[in-house]
Length: 68
Image (cartoon, rainbow, N blue to C red; front, side, top):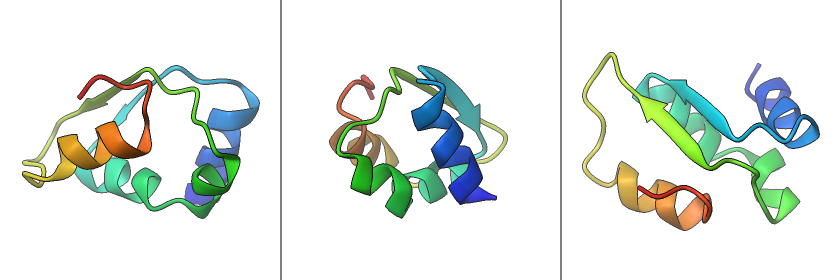
């Protein structure tokens, strides 16, 4: 399912997405997004559970268009 989500993000040029922290972390580790070289994401919303303290830094590093 993660690969499908990552492909949709790239194909449809999704700029806003959200989910629980584990979903965001899965996107960070997606080989589909990593191989693309650039993600269209500009905003990621996260809620429903506490996130790792390192997640904002990881999001900012992986998705350069997202202000974490």
